[in-house]
Amino acid sequence: MRKPIVTSAFVALAALVVAGSAAAHARMSPSVSLSNELQLYSLAIPTEKANAYTTKIVLTLPKGFSIDSFVPNPGWTRAEQSTGSGDNAVITQVTWTGGHVPTEEDSLFQFLAQPAKSGTYTFNVEQTYSDGSIVNWAGPESSANPSPTINVVSSVSGGGTSTLTIIALVLGALGLLVGGLALFSRGGRALT
Image (cartoon, rainbow, N blue to C red; front, side, top):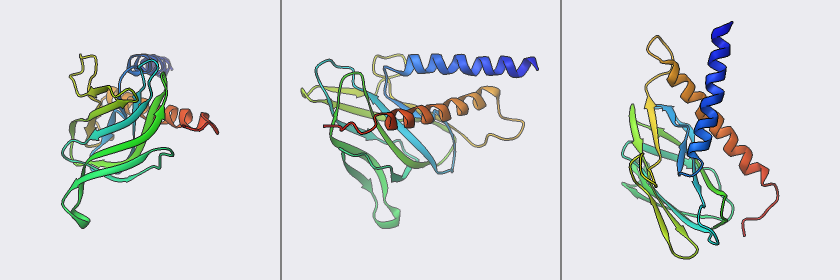
């Protein structure tokens, strides 16, 4: 009985720490996912600059991370760069323009994607503000503007799965839920 209580407390504490520390950075959710599985991903980018709006986001994808389809983003126009053609086309970069996200709010983009193999995937994000300034979310984890990353595992079942991996997956799912709720809580407010 005591172990589930301790585990639940740890998960709740970790969720608060992650939410507080990640609030000021571009982030990709879920932070832990499965290789060779089509999953819903969310990219959230904070508008931190006072008296300016986020108007453009450029996402550069790591090798082996394949986007299948996108969730619509009202108010934004999407353009994709890819290599190959037809069924062999691979998206390498996505640019969203035309948004108008004010200070202290996040731009949120969602898509179905599949990482090819286990490992760490690092994404580069370029954020443009209405005053023309640019923030490159492309630094190491210890920098002011770290790249969003995800860890990809081959499975979550069996004896090889650590408790930390399971907690990370739960936190990732909670992050998606919170992101979705934040998006829908805006209600009828326009992004103009």
